[in-house]
Structures are given as C-alpha cells and as structure tokens.
Length: 270
Image 1 (cartoon, rainbow, N blue to C red):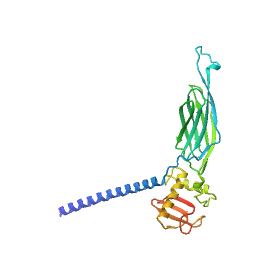
Image 2: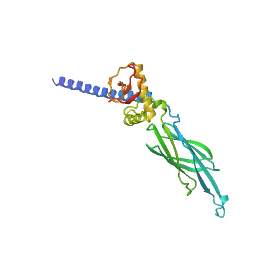
Image 3: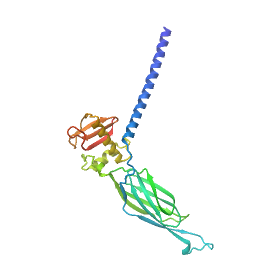
Image 4: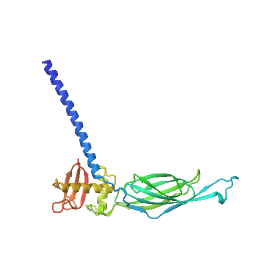
C-alpha cells in the first residue's frame, strides 16, 4: 500500500511539473506571437519628411582672443554666426546647423517642444560649414503638432548667446489621415487623435502614423483571409463592424460586406 501511495505521489509530482512547464511554454509562445505580430505590422517610414521650420534662425557669438598685452581690441574678436534650420519626421527632428565662423563653436543646445512632449538636445563642437544632427525620440503624437525649438550656443568659458526661438510644424500625411473615420468627433483628425491616445500604447505604436498603418495592415489581413465580423458596432458611424485577428481588434466600415471603408478604432484584444 505504501509503495502504491509513493508511486501515486511521484506520478502526480511529474504531472504537476509537466503542467507548469507547459504553462510557461504557452505564455512564452503567446509573447513570441505578439512580438512577431508587432514586427510584421511596423514598417520603416521614419525618413519621410512631415514638417519643417517656418524660417531660419541665427545667433552671433563673439569669441575673444587674449593678446600678449591682454588688451581686447576689434582685431581680437572673432565673430561666429550660427544658423539653425530643421525638418521633422514622424519620430525625430533633424537639425541643420551652419557655422559661418572661422573655427568651431563649442556647443549648440536647446529644447524641442512639440506641444505633446519636450526633449533637450546638445550638439558639441560644431565645425565651420553645415552639418546635420538627428534628434530621435520625438514622436508625432497628434495629427498636427506646432513645434517650438528654443536654442542657444556657447563658445568659450563665459560667452553665451541669448536664446532664440525657431517655430514650425509637422502633420500626419493626408493619405493616412483619410483612412480614418470622423466618427462622433466631427473630423478625421479629432477622431484619430482620440483613438491613438486611448489605444496607441497597448498596440505598441510609437507614433500616430504607425498606429494607422498597423490598423490598415490588420484590415488587409482580415480581407485576405476572408474573416467574418464578430458583431456590428453601434454609434455615429454607419455600417461599422468589429473584427478580431491575432492579438488585435478592428472597428471598420464595411462596403458590400467587405471591410474596405473608413477605419474607426483599433486596439489590443483582451
């Protein structure tokens, strides 16, 4: 009897271990599937220019040189003029800095304010001529952003130029915006801003452009696989239906039973 109980306990222990291992495998598999889905739906459009500065801004810096007699004369002052221009992509600001001086400028620095976030930048040792510097981690978080860059420059130990402000904007391409429904918000941009703010993080979209592309790619897969809708979606948008595919859900307008109309909402299926 004791031997039987011992064998039974051993069998149950092995069974428990197998169940635990299987649970871990399932969890890992689900995690891997989610990562694969994300990689498949995120494509490289990071280099497309979506906006720019309204105009160039400039700063003049007076860099002093000490003469043998330590007297400062006009001949001992070397003017350095620095000009800033920029363009914007969906994830970055590309600075175009021109140093019109005869030697390098120690530092060009400032703050990028998109209205949705702020990011500081420092560009050291700016040589004479024109150079470009990409400031990453500045994603487009609404359909349109008015951008303000407050910047300055330093040359020498105690010489700082007064800061100046460069303004401009960037916005989502019209071909992406026109994929989205106005919904109950009254405009495509207002509706898209709302849904990206609500669901963007859960689908791991780094910016609003990527969010629309991911939704459109899910829609294409739904059509390709001829999936049927789960249910109709009541609300301001007529003929709106819910589809579920992989880890995602999609609300989209159907035309002749095909989800080829405006996108309404996109998120992670829970």
